[in-house]
Length: 98
Image 1 (spheres, rainbow, N blue to C red):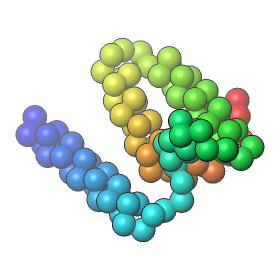
Image 2: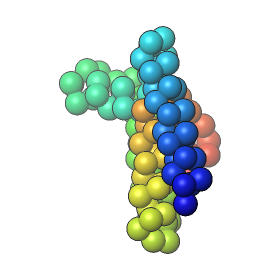
Image 3: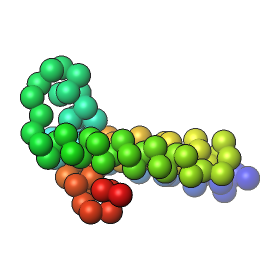
Image 4: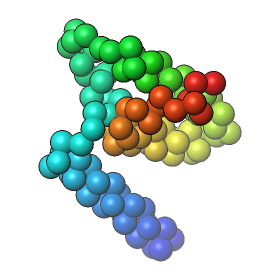
């Protein structure tokens, strides 16, 4: 049990470090950056709109495929990290179009 807690804390620390690095270096725009621009009525490029559509479709598909609440919440958190950390262009790849 304590090993699992340690492992979870290590993962969270690693994610926090990656997040802080993104802030420090102002990495490429993420899905959440693009979404914020959309909410602020800033014009989006066609690529940005497509990435948002692909991400939303991916998110719904992934969450609907989870077998129980525990799996759902775990995957939900993972997808939140993706939306915050991944370059939005990741969601322009063909695997996110289906």
